[in-house]
Length: 247
Image (cartoon, rainbow, N blue to C red; front, side, top):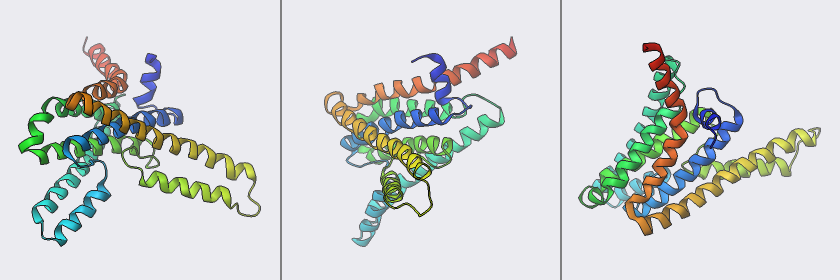
């Protein structure tokens, strides 16, 4: 990838095109981590609705410990989103280029930790592995949420499928007096974006499942490398800027 492209992809100066490209990359990464993580821990770690529903079922049948495990997973996802916000606000206050790249660097580190230690901790410390993956997914989802002003998510599809249904409804029934161009083109553009995100999440899921089947926990290492590549240029720009200021 050209360096200027990578700089614009995760740098502080945003464009709509960069937001969409980054969302597509992260949707694919999320799909791979989610599917591979399921094969590792037998639980989807980006699907908070499912985890909360399972908590309710566990409480209903008296499995308090399982419900508490679910709560730990939800809180880990929440803390990932919380930490992303702290990263962004801290970097923005200091006018760093890497305000959105720093959480991605941490995500890459966490994926490496999962890949290297997953076999050990998925045995007696399964909850810790689940919490690590949930934290990572919360971290990532908050990045694109903040970048897009809560328009785009990358780690779960319920909202995207809902938005597709809304867009199709608007296209199927236009209000009298509404011009075809004003009603149709924005919705088609939105459908292309949402459709591509869902497709890439699916492709990432296939890649993650196949990767885990053949490489085990180490399948996350290539994912971490891609995430680190996406974040590299803004971080490097900030490091070089500090070195220049201190020279």
